[in-house]
Image (cartoon, rainbow over all chains, first blue to last red; front, side, top):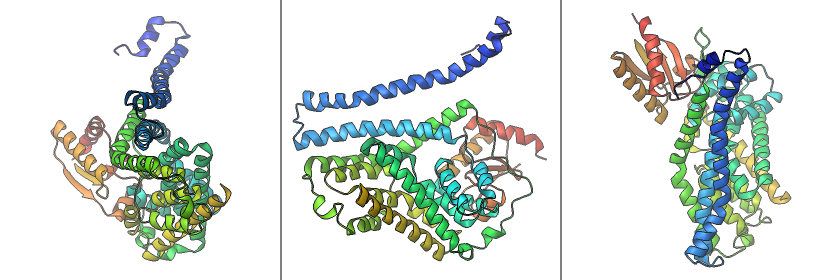
Length: 363
Length: 83
C-alpha cells in the first residue's frame, strides 16, 4: 500500500473529504477483522461435519464404537479448542492493551476496603498481567497506598478468572457454566482479599515493600500503542500461548478422548458424583499443588464430567489448578512472609472448596 | 549510555536483552548493559510490569517485549543525551 489516505483526500479537495478520510481509515481497520471473524465462524461451524465425514464415512468407523467416538472426540475437540483459544486470546489481548497497570493502580489508590476489593477483582480480570509481574505489581500497588487486602483481591482474580478457562468452559459446557465460573471467581477474589485484609497482614509483608520509594518522576508507561501495534500484540500473544500450551492441550484432549471412548458411562457417578462430600476436597487437594493451564485440564475434565463426575468438583479442580501455581508462590515469597503466603493459599483454597460444594448442591 | 534491563529472568527479559543488543549493533553504539533482578530496585523505578528498559536512569518502556524497530527507535532518541 503506497498511497496514504490523506493524499487521496487532497486529490479530492472537497470539504467533506475529512469525513471520508476517517471512514476509509475505519474501514481499513474493520475490514480485515470482519473477514477474519467470518472465516473463523465458517471453520468453527464446519468442524463437526468435517470430522463426521472423515472419521465415520471416509475411515468407516462406527460412531458408537470406542475407537470411532474416541478418535472423533480427539480431532473435533482439538480443532474446536484451538479455534476458541485463537479467537479469545486475540480479542482479549487487544482489549487489554487499552488497560494499563498504572491506570488500575490509580483507580484503586484511594479506595477503602470492601468497594476496593470489588473494584480490584474486576480490574484483576481485565488488566493484562502475567505471574512474573506479580511481585513488582504488588510492590507498586502497596507503595502507592492501595490497601493490602485490595491488592490481594487483584492478585487472586487475575490468574483465577482466566480468559482461556472462560472460553473453554463455554465451548465445553455452555454459557451458564462459564458465567458461573466468572461470577464465583470474582466472589472468591473479593471475599478472600477482604478477609486477608481484615487480618491486618501488613506485619507479614516483607518490610522492604513499605520502604520502597518511587523515584521523583512519575513513570510514563511507555509510548502509546498504535492500532497495528495492538493487532501485532494480539497475534504475538496467540502464537506465544499456543506454543506454550499445545503439548498440554494434546495430552489433555488425548486423555479425554480415551476416557470418552473407553470408560463406561457413569464411571465416576458411583464415587465422585454430586453426593460424595469427599470429592471436592480431593479435587482441591490435588489441584492446588498442580500447576497446569486451563487448556490442559479442561478437555480431560469434560470427559470425566460426561462419565459422572460432579460439575462442582470439576470447577473446584480447575479453579484450584489455575488460581494457585507453585511458580507464582515462589515469586510471591519475596514479598510475602511464609505466614501470609500460607494464609493466602489457605483462604483461596477454602473459598474454592466452598464453591465446589455449593455447585455440587445447586447444579 | 547506561542500559538496564529490569526483570527477574523469565523468557521475556532475556528476549528484551537480546533485542537491545541487536539494536545497539544496528546503531553501532556501545553501552553498558546490566540486568536488574532485585524487586526492590525494580519497584524503585516505578515499574510494575517486567521486562522494562531503562536508559541512563530513564524508564523508556515497560511491560512488553517490543520489536527490534521500536528498541532501535528508543535508543536512537536516547543516544544524543549520552555524554
